[in-house]
View 1 (spheres, rainbow, N blue to C red):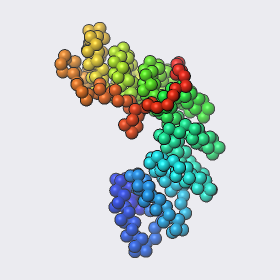
View 2: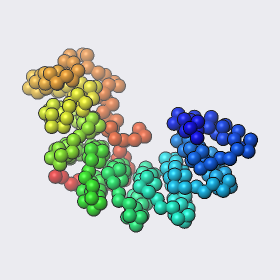
View 3: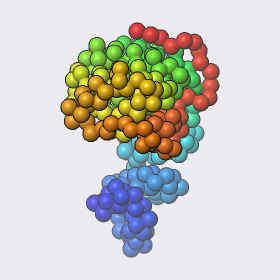
View 4: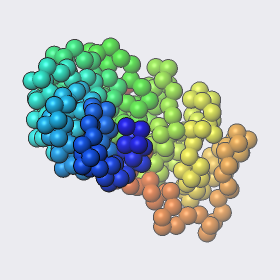
Amino acid sequence: ALLFGGSARHKECSKAMECYQEMVKHGATVGMVVFNTLIDACSRIGDMSSAAKLYRDMVEADCTPDLITYSTLIKGYCVRGDMSEAMRLFSVMKSKGLQPDAIVFNSLLDGCAKQGMPTLCEQVIQDMERANIRPSNHSASILIKLYGRLRDVSAAFEVFHGMPRKYGFKPNAAVYTCLMATCISNDKLESALELLQHMLQAGERPDDRTFSTLLRGALRGGCVQAVVSLLDTALSGHAGDCRKLLDIELTQSGLNLIFRKKCWSEQGQALFDSLSTAGVRVSMPVEGKMERGGGPYNNARRGSAYQTGGRNVGRTGEQRGPSKTF
């Protein structure tokens, strides 16, 4: 099992399967742990054909699949986007008397969200409630990203306000940042910046991804005032150590933007001095030496720190109405 586990961690599924075939060839007994580890190894690399064969071998060997088996398979099919097979296994698992846990439900929720299936997502949430499993910050983040892709900012805000109140949890930095990314990708930078203030007032500390997401949005929009405000907030100390919060390249791009917009003497110089004093290693912008083409400023146009799969949030669907403000 340790050998198979090492192969799974390093995504060396072929080596693990070769060992398994040798075990079968020599009549060795394969137990639950080995089967689950092999299924995990195949699922990690998206080889669901091999994972399905292992599942069948497991059943034929009178080794009863457990919650870990089904959870691993369901997640693997969700990652592949095969929601019909994931839902089928979910039904089989329940018919065997196995109680789904939060991992299974969130895997299904994430799979449905990535396929743009809001109705099925709502069904998964209802199933969670019936199973007495409370949706969490992770569940909220998944739904917020879904509605961001669908360009339904109002629905994203409804999730942000409604789920914590209904299920008794406090939005964390990941949830705030997902909603900020949704606002930015739907051309609502001001709402994203308001969320930062709301976050600080609620006593939730932003992290480096929060500031990277907001700085990318400000740079994409060419908004000097937003860049200045974000860097000032990081420097204030209310959010933590600015050296851990600020991405150096994005911060440098922010200073370059201020310089290009001819706002250096009014806002840039003092900000540069404060950043340098705080130990943030940035350089004084110089005409003709700022980044061109593939620099962080241009990369900022491609999206935020919380988008997955290289795809911008919010490219399809319709928006229900204006976003909520605080």
